[in-house]
Image (cartoon, rainbow, N blue to C red; front, side, top):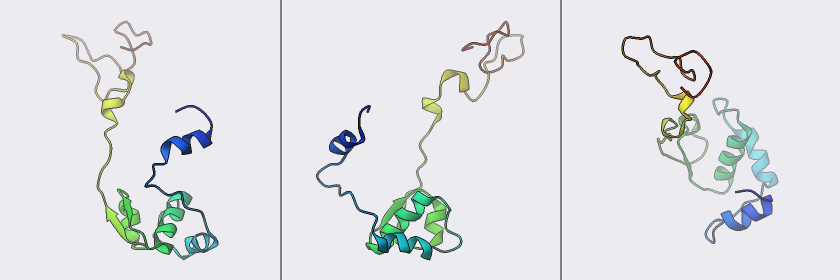
Length: 115
């Protein structure tokens, strides 16, 4: 979506989704996280919000789950990036009969291209 952030919120926030404020209590709770909690500031605020508001955090991040700071529903899901990768970043080079494989992102004559 292109446009101002305010338009994103109008379109993206459904009637059953609530935008929460970063309160002083939540900000303070980020300092109470255990030493083994990941350092990403956004993850820290999300976990602190879950703790302060007594919410269950749904995450696929095992480090957040293992920190045991807030109630977590672990969802071990990682999206596959292979299906959406541009052709020049495919995982294995193409095999040609009787020739060595072409490097990814190269044409057979060595010129740069889409292969």
